[in-house]
Image (cartoon, rainbow over all chains, first blue to last red; front, side, top):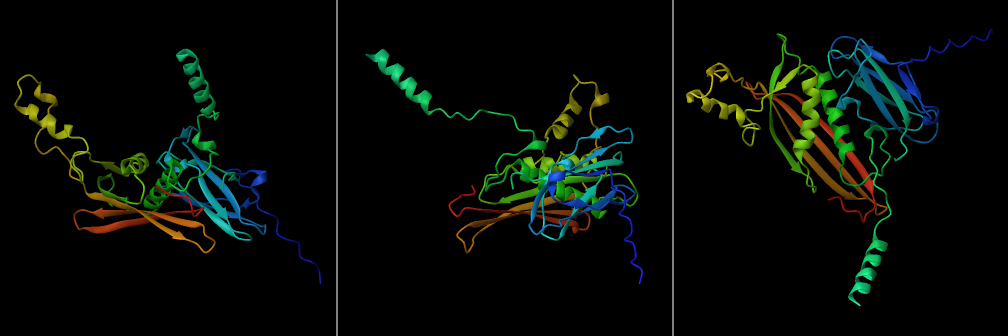
Length: 109
Length: 201
């Protein structure tokens, strides 16, 4: 019986940056258009230890200008071992149309 | 003799001074240790989550378009800490205002008007010293349509290993003032585990 080839991995979502030392990887962001733009990013922990991470989501308007908002405050999360966790995305203003998520290890947790 | 004693005291006091240098912390790269109490990181995190929940719920989407007028009602601090609830509420008000879905009235509030000037300027109606063009007329103030009330709770529990678990909870309710119905409710937990000897106030 011929071995079926695995489907190719989806291209990485450039809007979600995971630092190499975070230990988790991220699925592409899933978005629902409209206002506020809503979405989520699934983080997956393939290791056998819980991983403390810090995520920061920055929002930008159509011309690329950064929008300052409390919704961009760093959020501390734990991605459970061999499990997943979700980053919730909600646009802070009607002008917010682009975003950038940064996931890094939480060095103080 | 007195001169030498003074120098000695100064040297002793100088020796007791802490060598920790004061540094400015950037909230985006804040790696300072976490305490058992609540700090600005907890407030920002809680505020961010409740605002996301409120915006995502659709409770602030006015069916006919436009913005809802909100008033801040009572926010109760039921924790063992002295918390300036205004500080937290400001972290919620600013992004809600930014969202373009609501405006807040400061003319009334649970503990009286937040800004009493809205009423005070109306005393100028009788004054001949003021050009009346800018003086507010009767019936121009806008009454709130919704109110935001809340509570901050704290529960401490000693765990089996002697450590302490502190559960804080920040609860908010958005009430439609015409009907008295709660259109949205949110509860954001902040849980910490610390030494059994740590006090959280």
